[in-house]
Length: 345
Ligand SMILES: NC(=O)c1ccc[n+]([C@@H]2O[C@H](COP(=O)([O-])OP(=O)(O)OC[C@H]3O[C@@H](n4cnc5c(N)ncnc54)[C@H](O)[C@@H]3O)[C@@H](O)[C@H]2O)c1
Image (cartoon, rainbow, N blue to C red):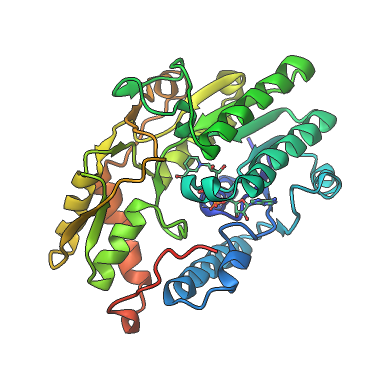
């Protein structure tokens, strides 16, 4: 069924991919994003070559969205009145909240801004949703809400004990969403994704860094001993899960879902697989970032049972598709050493 869907923070990596798919499926999709966090404004101040490449990726995102006529409202979701006016005009059936400083390191470096963009935007969105009696509010939480994994596989009933700014704000966000249901009957779904990767991502997470190292002929550097594990999830699987959540409100409302590949893999194993694509690279090691939680597999049994979710991308398959895309995007004249990688404003 065609629905009016608003994506707050929809100009980001997940949001634009989700908007394209929801649009393809015949929904009426609108993006609200002021493009200033991990987006155009962030990149404008930096003249490094990798940021020039990321700007190209952003342009491609917006070309693709414009091509299929998905509108983008450049509204700062911290501004309640602007957000309220923009969403009220649309009167959506579904509001999806994605806006955030979506990065563990960056959140810890700038808690104030993280609170503002992740939590204040959420409170504003919740208030707008309850005022408009929006039939379905979807919040993007994170696997970091669990904190250090207490077992190799966690399902949604596991105790959440986050540490650091990012995971803590995500769990606070979940509680705020649930409290709006308790007080105002707001119908909601909470999604806990993990370690997404895929085309047009500019976030510089580990898979992207490893592939860029391979493309530039640099070392693949593992932080730690390579035994850390993450439930790496290809973007197409996540999008499929979200589409199911939207299409099956009778099964998804009032629920929390892990939506991941459902199989954690080691960082050392990841490096090995990336190296298969770039045999000339060397794997090196440096200190682990101890603010990263120790993670494992997020069980997707609940999503399988209730939504018919069935992830299709193993790490090997996802890497193949992503590397293929990145090779096509990587400008030939840019071969060689790029020294300013991942410098973030
Ligand atoms: N990518 C992952 O691996 C991952 C994993 C778990 C959870 N998540 C969550 O999913 C959501 C989307 O992640 P992403 O990877 O697409 O991040 P992203 O950084 O690519 O996108 C976030 C978007 O939010 C926008 N935004 C931030 N503050 C805003 C504001 N005040 N007003 C309007 N827009 C604003 C930014 O401009 C950006 O386009 C986030 O909430 C993130 O925490 C992501």
